[in-house]
Length: 305
Image (cartoon, rainbow, N blue to C red; front, side):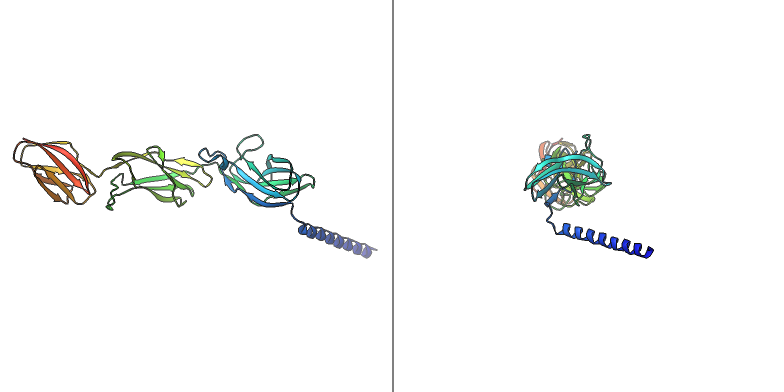
């Protein structure tokens, strides 16, 4: 009797297993009612500098036939945080829905991974899309910025032709440069967290300028550095007027050019030093001093007494 009951139990289990297998295989062979899925993988719902359509995640798919649907968002534990991103009856076509990164109470959700879940109401079936939607509302941290060549001359001679801003960010991010409060076009090619951003001073006037860096992470969040003051100068004399009582004038010239030309009165010459002495005219009077470096000049008045 016991052996007969055991035989019936085993036979029942085999039948149940075979039935489940057959149902599973039939479902595999059925055409999926949801096709052409495309989902944004990363966004920041609080990115004020991003285009409006980048502050939400697009969920795009195509229905094989008309369906009554409900599209919800679940966190990594499977808890629904936002219901009804899309609800209603939708036809046999492509549909796009947008999730703004907020929960049912309208609050921005915590940073992390989320998934979209689509329920077909008439069939009582729920699809969890495999693609994760990552919410990142936290800007990167700018850990260090060091300017090199805070005084430079963009004259192409290979001597301090640019400013280098060496930076270190807390995560991979693009480096964006601001000059005098205005963003320069483009951004760094690399997203390396430690790198160098250059400014070549293209078209900028001689004098002081304010530089600042921004770090923009992959979600679009921005963090800004303090401003750094740099100065463009080609050749400068420390004074605009010299009074000489004697036969020579000692000059100190600010430049990175190695070869200088000077002219005073009817005399002139070439020097390879930034501190040098030149003769002055023997007659008392006012004279024009010109010091030239790579075609750019600094001028001053020399009064001989």
